[in-house]
Length: 204
Image 1 (spheres, one colour):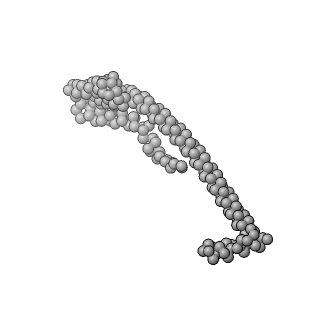
Image 2 (cartoon, one colour; image 1 turned 45 degrees about the vertical axis):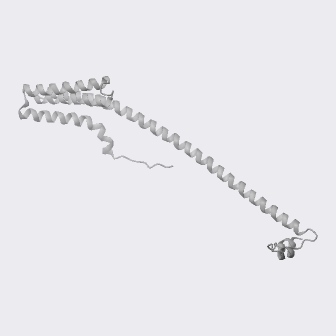
Image 3 (spheres, helix red, strand yellow; image 1 turned 90 degrees about the horizontal axis):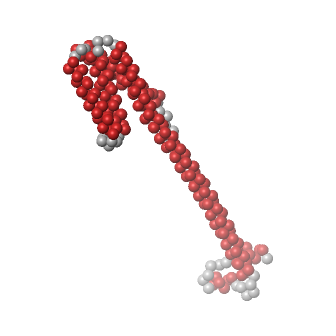
């Protein structure tokens, strides 16, 4: 029961760790591009981002309260979307980088905090699965060893039994050949197979 060992590439292992900072950095960059293309000090654009961020926050609150099925992943996604919209709105509206960078750092920290929670849960699930797999492997190995010993025992018993039957049959043939008046040729003439009397007579 050897299971294949799967070694993941280092890129696949590092991708979840850098995903939060990549996401927040992408939002910051897009916000600054938006700022350079006319969003700076635009009240309408800022109001739009505020409405969208508030809507995402409301959806996250409903999901966390159970109205959305009580899905924690849905609530986290909604709150992350709200934070991203707020960061994009500030990055697009502000005329300098200090405030957008401050919000970027805050959003990145919050994103890593949320991600760390799911990483711990995933790690616990992985450890529990590996522990259960090890227990099942040991149980199956024990069952296989028991069955192997049982089959070997049955083979030995069958071998000893067949050997005993053969010895008993040889002894019976030998004893019958020594009886007075026993004529193996008469049995042959009666249609019975000829008995191997040559070996038995050599012993006597």
